[in-house]
Length: 108
Image (tube, rainbow, N blue to C red; front, side, top):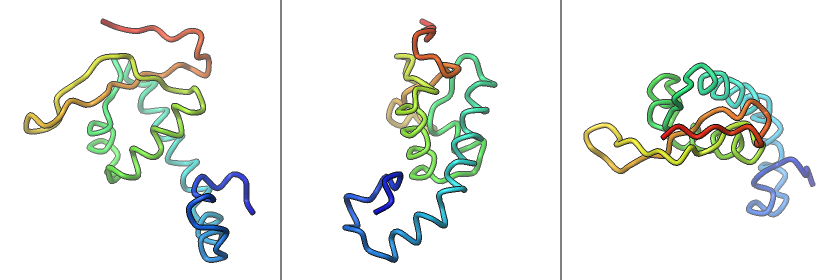
């Protein structure tokens, strides 16, 4: 079993799922780096829908990479919310922690 596979508990070690994970692993790293750099370039932070709009990533893909970056301590929810396009539901605003969760600055 590949321990770095985030879905390993869901596919019960299916060889096809393990193969799929190996194929996409590098791409997910590249997407995380792209999203992290984008958030770092926007000091006021970005919402998922803004990241999707800038990068062209689907909501599911952008959201998954944001979750991974949060778990790694590289970005954080700054507590602010923004309305989505067309007045949709409020979205969290994410800022870069620059690899140090102790230096998180919240903008209010």
